[in-house]
Image (cartoon, rainbow, N blue to C red):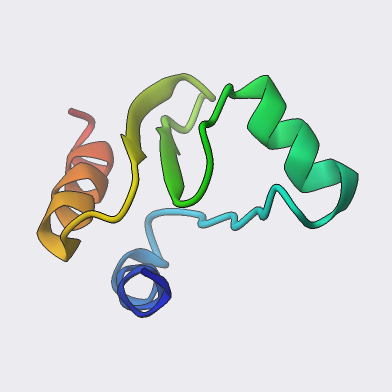
Length: 77
């Protein structure tokens, strides 16, 4: 998934802030995964600019699914 996410980050970097956390990398990642009740890797959570959760995607998914979710976030939908 990393190459896909890297490409999408390049594509949307002027509109969306990407934050990558690893549940196995210390307290910060583990805490975020616990707070958000994420089942594991990969997990994607998209938030609106005001911090409201907009979409969750779990597991290995096709690039077009992530691209559509990000485009919808940018468009406010």
